[in-house]
Length: 155
Image (cartoon, rainbow, N blue to C red; front, side, top):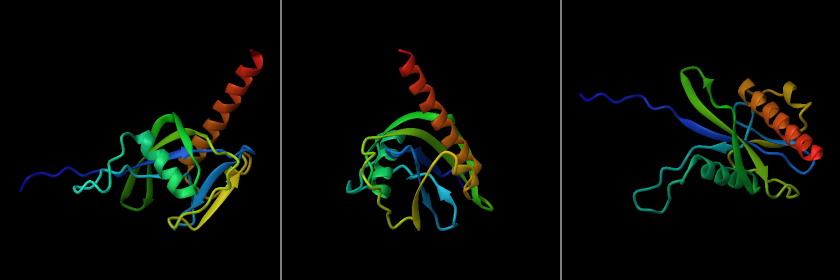
C-alpha cells in the first residue's frame, strides 16, 4: 500500500476594518468569533470552478462572498501563519493578512456560512470569545495602521 502523507487544511483570513475603524468578525457554528476568509479553491476538473491564482486572490474572493465587501489583500501578519485546533484531533494552518477595505462605507452582509456578523473596536476584541491567534493578528493590524498614520503625519 503506498504511503499517503496527511494533508493540513489551510485557511486564509483577513483583518478588515470599516470606515469607523472597527474590525469585521463572523460568529461560527462553535459560537466563536473569527476573521472572514476560507480555503483556497483548487478548481474542478470540468473547469466550472476555477482555481484561485494565489492565497491573496482567494482571500479577496472569500471576503466578498462572506460579507459583500471588496478588499485588497495586504501584508502577512504575525509571521504569516499559526496553527489552530478547532476541535480535538483537527488542526488547521491559519494564514492571516491585513486587508484594505475598498468599500468601507458599504454595510457588510452575512452569508449562509456564519451565524452572526459583528463590527468591533480594538478595545472590544480582547473580551471576545475567539482564538488568541486572531486577537494577536487584529492587534498587529491596528498597530501597523497606526504606525502608517504617524509616518504620514510626520511627512
